[in-house]
Structure formats: C-alpha cells, structure tokens
Image 1 (cartoon, rainbow, N blue to C red):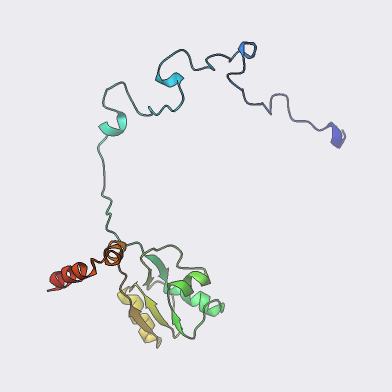
Image 2: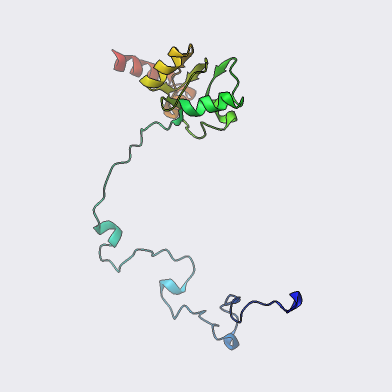
Length: 179
C-alpha cells in the first residue's frame, strides 16, 4: 500500500443532486416537487400548517412565564474575582466596574450591568462600582476592607424618552412612584 493508493470507500463521498437541470438528469422539470400547489413554488412557509386543523404547537398547553421587564445582569462570584487578583489580571488600585471585569475575562454579557455574588473565598481589598451585590458579597467585601457602590442603571425606555424631550414626564412619574 502506498500513500497515493489511499482512497475513500466506494459511496463514502456522494455529490449532491442538482435538481431542475433537464429531463436527462431524472430530476428535471418539476425538480422533485411534484405538480402545482404552494409547495411546488419557491418561498413556501407552511411549517406546522395542518390543513386548517389546530396545529400541534397550538394544541399543547404552554408552561412558564417570560418576564419582559427582567434585568439582565452579568453575575460574578467573589471567588472568581479573588482568582483574578491572585493571577494579577485585575488591577487592585482604583475602582472595579463592569468594564474592568470584562477586560479581566469575567462579567461578560449583562446589558443591565454586573452583580457580585458571595460564593467563594475572598480577601482582596477592592472598591466596586456595580449594578448590584448580594448581602453576603457586600459583607465579605466590607470585611476585607473594601467598599461597594451601587449605581443606578437607567432603562433603555427612559433613556429614549429623555432623548425625545420627555425627561420631565419620566422624572415626575418616578417621583410619584417613590412617594
């Protein structure tokens, strides 16, 4: 056996069927689609259509709830932050915020900011500026000599309203809700 004798097994590599290439090909004219009707034409979107009968995906009961107002936080544990400090990937001087955590390799995602959770061992003295922190995480950070500043994340809808000049109405609405 030589390297130039190596071949795939017969039938291991099969070329795709090119439909609609004349009567001699065996799949010409209608291209394997049969005759007439919606499915013989291009741009068909009848997935799940059962001829007017209630489709399966509508017959099955729905479960759960999807909260459209839920906040999306990037969750970071104190143990992961301590590992970054030990590996000197996180700067201990200055304030640690979402951007600093992203640059260090944690805190990805989270369009509404980052939230610190208290899982893991923690001993570094850091000051955080984050969107949220659990009670245990806050206690651990303050015990190690650090500080936590919670920033207020402005929702996108309020930003858009303020941009259009409706900022006063949003502020009034918030003041009324707080009262």
